[in-house]
Length: 243
Image (cartoon, rainbow, N blue to C red; front, top):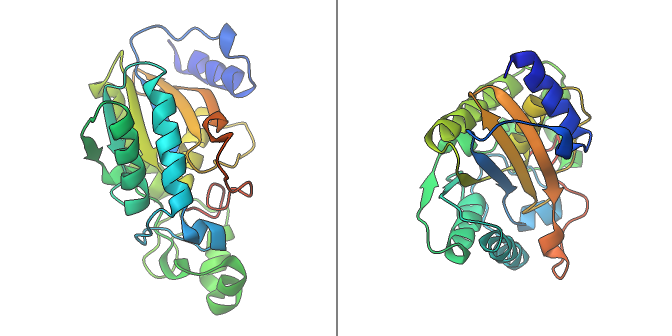
């Protein structure tokens, strides 16, 4: 499959016509899931790499997505960011899927937001104006004051992570539990010409990777497992606000 045909396939799936795309069989299906809800998601605080735990609603969401995945086919491996909100989500999924051991991978960690971490956007704009301005910048090499990462650094980290996973698990279904900022980056890789979307807590997002660089976004932002559970419809942290 050529690079150009891969790009066409990605765009077709992103526009909702998954049935017309042929990507072969020698690839993994990587189910990328955003962590469950936290109190800081509810409060609209930038979490970044601060180690915030799930709240009770987030645990219910994680259990629900785990039960769903257990009914949809064998899961061969579960990877997770080492941050508590992702790792606990992954462990609840693992319990539902037969007790698989969760593999921590720092490549799935949320973007480090530097001085903005722990702040709400309105406070960040006044307390850390330079950092907040940098967050809103369209420059991919713009690092955030206080040790924060640039978009390019996050891109390199998480794209490399999924490529490595794809090489190890060809022909298998794999779960990767991560964060909103990482999901945004993966979506841009697969759908470079599409508008950003909001990735809600425990949303199911399926990527197919073949030959390392051929990306297809098969389906995404699926929260059908939350039909009996409350969730944040604002998607805070699942868009540019990372979380």
